[in-house]
Length: 149
Ligand code: FES
Image 1 (cartoon, rainbow, N blue to C red):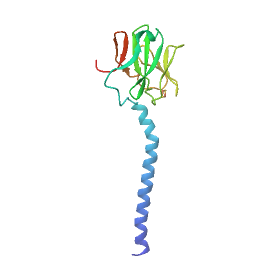
Image 2: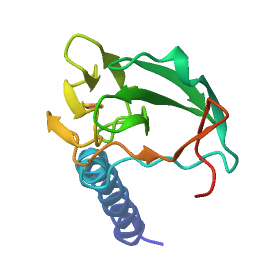
Image 3: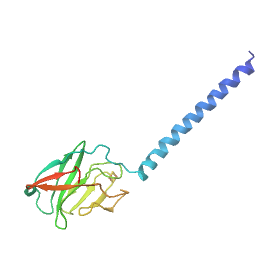
Image 4: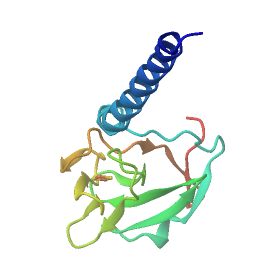
């Protein structure tokens, strides 16, 4: 084998390697952009209802965070709709959404995304979609969230 024949496969290998690194770099840049347009969704919702305590523990205009499977959920007592529940996972980049009693809104602390307490819709900020609403059932004064309708 001559020197010239040995260089061709090495050059080809380097070309493949540089193409591979270019593809990895493009993926690193495109990944967050794609995640922005396809927001995070809860992958594991409990199939059975989860207790969120008794009705009287959440005064009107207040909320509490409860564990809903692997994720937190916000249970809010609204004057307009009564008890409502939402996934407390922000639809932007999945930060935890907290309740702000002074503004009566829930917000993701990461990028100041604000959500309406009545319907979970986006008020402002970068979240692309509303918070995911969770079914609420009141049984004998106890709040149950999730499960089948
Ligand atoms: S993660 Fe909620 S606004 Fe960005």
